[in-house]
Length: 259
Ligand code: NDP
Ligand code: 8X3
Image (cartoon, rainbow, N blue to C red; front, side):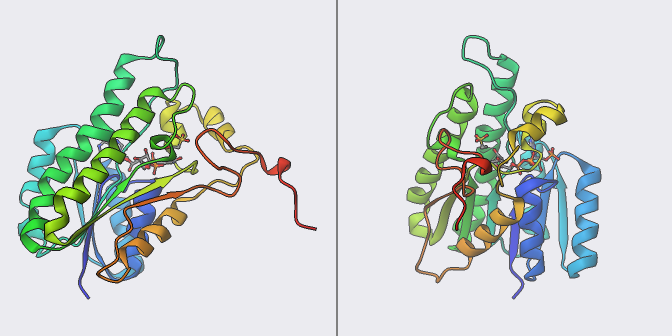
């Protein structure tokens, strides 16, 4: 088969799970992130488990020069790029608009929007030249409905939603699929990052719910990437059983159990 997937932010969470899912199916996997040790660990695991080819690229998606250097000569490393997963992203802090930390705001905007754009700007021309490919953008339920104290994170994910639609339109002539996967609450390193290493607070986010896992999103990525050539899922929202939207969710204890 010899297909290739590039996943940004594959050192943990969704990105790592997607790397495992596609490597298992024989894909050549190109994984990126800032943490070199993690990249090396994931590469070793993937190679030993699946014997697949793994390329690691260490860069910060916020740094335009690093992105251009890392991805600018991708053609010399890969014959073809079948799938790009724009996954690298984060929330930093939670606060009202009058009290938010402006550094946090800049981190989220630079990572979730500008980073996604820098990467896409390198890969979309390669896909255009191939007249094929699939871009999967990881959005969020936060890009569908704003929640209290989520202001800037939500705004970045609304931005991802807009860019997903725009990419779909712009890339239509080239047979390139574009899909947004918008997950609700998922237990990854997301909350640990949002709460700046406060493990107790991060764990509390998922108390008495059965949240999504990285593997759930990886299965969905595999599904959307393996539809017939004429079928494109443009937009997909997924939550765990007890969450309906960004704002409406219940605890497991509140759920009426089947008799
Ligand atoms: P994780 O924190 O587990 O993973 C985030 C990944 O993004 C890491 O691999 C991290 O790598 C990478 N990353 C973050 N900042 C940068 C950067 N500046 N440059 C390069 N890579 C970066 O969280 P998730 O897996 O949960 O998050 C993945 C995506 O899913 C994000 O876009 C997030 O907004 C979105 N999402 C998450 C949800 C959740 O509840 N978990 C729900 C909906 C969407 P490294 O630190 O090594 O650079
Ligand atoms: C991450 C999920 O609910 O924290 O996008 O916004 S949430």
